[in-house]
Length: 246
View: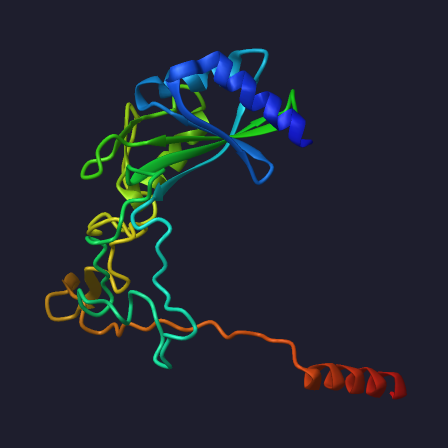
């Protein structure tokens, strides 16, 4: 899709929905809108049904945690040590835990949790990203889109399980990936990398028991930096010559 076509879509969205959406932008060859939670179902129903849009297919929905957005956990090359980096190693809150309390708030993303839906219009050959921020950070609640696109059922269950986002109106909101007794939501940025509890089978009591984490050692691997080197070019040439000779 050409850039003018995307811009035309963004202009139509602004004109149609007005103050029902907080933000419209075109970036990375896709249009994105931020919808006010109170109007989410109304806007999505219009996006699905109205001839100018016809986003009949919901491709995906996911949760996002914007805690510490724009802040890097990694040190720069001048400050980095040989022992690794990341919240699994260098956290002041303890091994495997990172304290985000003093990180600055991003000027654009003032709320922490968002639900992001990716829509597809086969009729117009267009894609659209719909983002909606939960009004509260401690208890993120958003309207369910099951009534608009029934296929979103399991996607919303996944976002609830991993991020703790509650979708009001969902017919069967429960965990889908983690265990029934799982504590917390593992994709939240303040969730400890080593988890809160570990599970094992106890042969003495003949059942599965939950215990504080003791057997897991926090470990963050540092990605190897690949740099071009003249020796590699020579080695490739020699390998190519050997292959030709054989």
